[in-house]
Length: 129
Image (cartoon, rainbow, N blue to C red):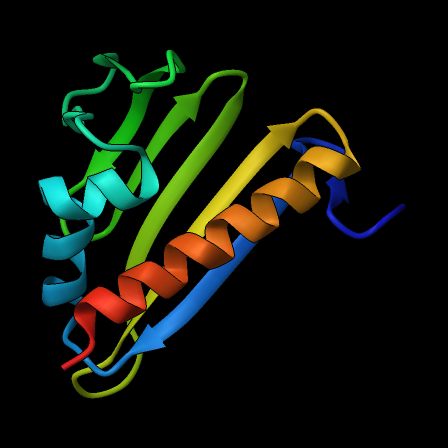
């Protein structure tokens, strides 16, 4: 089976990065309007109740599947599913993970890999001291 192809979730991609910040600081940023604009798009109000919907400026719609404050957000993004998670890794450090699954094919996976890497770089730039 090719890299990134799973039996259950189709094509998927994950990007993660460790930050020298407490998990709460990383979480507070990624769910803030400024953080949401980076990973979901400008002007999107992140839903916090399961079943709530949203729409991006580009017309992509989605629905919140799960929201655990301080931990993770899982939502649909068009036909795919995106999860954003923050977890502690040692004293005063946090790992931020973006994971997307159910993509159509390997080409979409590669496009999204570039997208999530760019998002992560922008998050890192914004959170840099």
